[in-house]
Structures are given as structure tokens and as C-alpha cells.
Image (cartoon, rainbow, N blue to C red; front, side, top):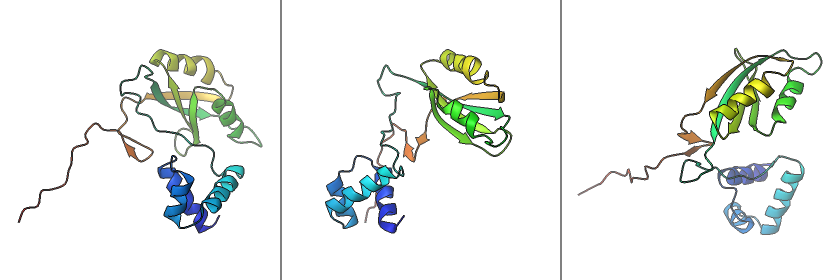
Length: 164
């Protein structure tokens, strides 16, 4: 990956809605070059998708319960943690799965409509997988910052007044 590609990735990581023409101007390249780089990075699966970060607490009926679940598993010979991680990430409720260092092996992020729905997922789907030894569920009570963005209603101007 060259420096132009890295620069483009940094731009769209901050704002995936930037139009190709805007990206081209910001980077000092043509719009065609920008399209070619985007197509290449999408084809190579460097860019896996584009998404919006939503604050579901703001006036929507679609509130969701998010939980982080620490999972201790028995790795399988020859495939390690990959097969059990794959089995877990295929559940539609699962938003992310990470291999972790420390006491637990996997960290699983899931969303459900209620805490009971998350509980059913853990008891009926996750904990019944053969390799899963134990789980610990942590519910996210409030998001303050996610993917570098602050979730706050406080848009107050914090600049200091300077007077002569």
C-alpha cells in the first residue's frame, strides 16, 4: 500500500460520506485516480464497507442493548481460535469478535432489543457451543465515545473569551 492509498483511507475513515470529487481535491489528485484507488481497495477488501455511527438514544424507537461478552474457549488443534470465532461471528446478533490477550480468549460485541434478548443469546446460542468454557457479560450502559466520536449533547462553545 502506498502513501496515497493510506491518505485516502484516513480521509474516508473519518468521513465515509466524502464525495469522490472532494477526496480528489483534498488529496491533490484527479477524480478518476480517486475512483481507481477506491475500486482497487474495495476489490482487495481493504475497504470492507461504509457505515454511519448512530446515537440510537436520540429520539428513536429503535433503542438497542449492547453487550460485551468475554468468552473463554478451548482452541481446536490446527485452527486455534479461528473456527470457534467464525462460528460466533456468523450469528446475526454479533457485531464484532476479537481475539484477546488476558484471562478471556474472545471478546464478543452483540446487540439486542432487550437485556433478556441478549441473555437468551448467551444462554441458548453462545454458551452451548462445544468449545466455549465460560462467559462474562457486560452491558454497555452509556456511550461516551465510539470510533473516535464523542456522544454528547453538550455542544457548548468552550473557547475562552479574550479581552484587551
